[in-house]
Amino acid sequence: MYHRVLPSSVYHPIWFYSIVLLVAITLCPVLAYLSKHKELKKFQLPCILLGLSVPCITALLMIFASNNAVLIADFWRRLLLYNISAPYLLFILLLMPCVICVATWISLFFGYPTEQFSITKEMSVMKGSAIFGIVIPLLLAPLIEELGWRGYGVDSLRAYFNLFNTSLLFGFFWAVWHLPAFFIKGYYQNELWNLGIIYVINFFVSIFAIAVLMNWVYYKTDQSIPAIVLFHAVLNFSSMILRTQQFTKCIATGILCIISGIVIACDSDYFFNNTFLPIQAGS
Image (tube, rainbow, N blue to C red; front, side, top):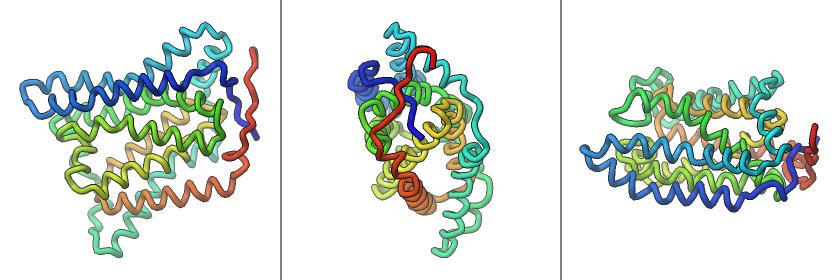
């Protein structure tokens, strides 16, 4: 089974990732400054939404400004592809909840409390902004991000590299893109920085493991963007809903790394084969 990807001549990944990462890096000092001044916090959310939207906006501009009928038609095909086979739908819905539960159970042997299985009282990732702190990671981020990443970004890399290298490169770009969040006072990633460098490292390692699994599901579902939007939402929800401690999340990352390793080993030809089926007009 090969991937369906347009030829490399259609894509411009250097331009796409340069724009996305340049904006992300530029926003770092801006968001850090705004988050530390109460009188300026009203400008913080628009900047966050701007950073969140840049991959999507860049992808849409590059797709529709290309005037390439095949590229545009393929984007609409992937965007409207809701027919997800049962095995992959179950994988999407159950992977992260099961990983969190197993990690929590393991953490009990290290003396961590059973209260981790209870629902958290504060699910927001942004202190002082309960509504947006829930809406952004559960609704906006999965939809807006994946329109950019899976709408253009991942396929633009896959046109040049095999799926394994594509996932590693995308994981690196995705990690760099998250950097501004570490500078926003009260934001989840900023709290990780305050807790210790080990939890920051864990966050970035988890990004690579998740990138492998999400890309694998993406191509196995015939590049269904809705499938990955759902996957992304379930991942965020599972990480937020319970009182999971950071040590337990480190265990969860280890489990995700093992699962991604097993997926790569069991489907090695799919990850390391450089061949893909070029999409032609009308296909």
